Length: 369
Image (cartoon, rainbow, N blue to C red; front, side, top):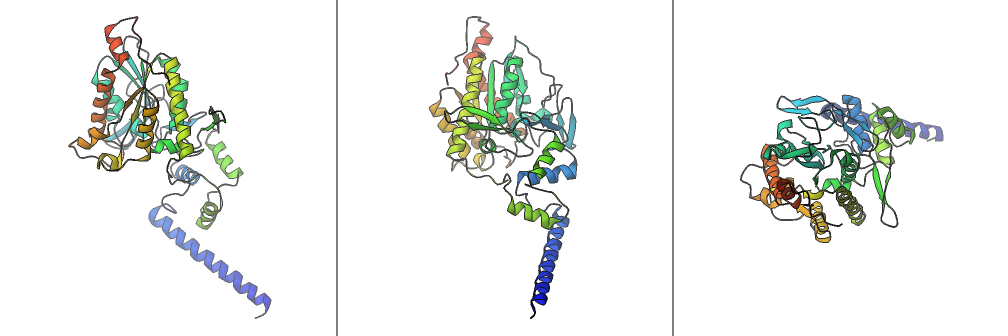
């Protein structure tokens, strides 16, 4: 066969292959409304989600934040079903009341992820809201953020602790949050702490831009270019170094980073004359079967062994509970139990006892990290 005919045959075959691949990918897109379910990278997830919904993260109540990556809009309302409403206060946090300092109350500042924010549950059933109902002497500030890692929790605490003067800081986390702290991008571009050779934290990947700036940054780097031609998207996904969606185990470097992050939270809390409570939130198989220990629980148990302080792991109480437990985000039964356990823990703290005694000389027993 003449060389020219051979080349033409090769090109025709390549074209037909590309067409067949494109048809197959478009059919997948038509059936599932998504290509390569689930998305293989967070950049892909963000671009696809934003193009389809025009909103950031979800529920239409989020906005970019220069240091945290994303936060909630003040005084926003949204709903994902007739039974699940999302309300933010004037400070831009999920609460049915505006935050205000009340020195005569026992003030509790909570940082956390979607389990504290309250994904998939109505405003009135988030565990910080139920904690507020446990005792009239409490003043609870729920500063949990959906999708947050431990790094975004630390930044939130750094930016808000001076304004709210808490008696107690609670950091509540799930195992995934440890891995999230290693990422430069998740639901959106996010901050990233790195460790110096001396073990000090320093912040990178900020300031986080607005949505058009982040989209341009992704495209300008040549890392991803979303297109209705799914073959192009497939090529980009396979050939570029993006932020993977899949979650590997929290390795040694991840553990060192998160140890530094939690130590920083403890130190910051101590400087502001408050106590610190670290809570591990078990979920999924952890609250259904007693066998096995997850990366998150292993980290939690190791950390509290090495660093004196206040800790709560409610896994045993969840396992013993007789109500039907969910596999995903907590529902009313789980948040009710958790709020009761947290209140019991608070009642055992020196800072709570001192506040109730109204003893001006009584200081909380703050651990030295």
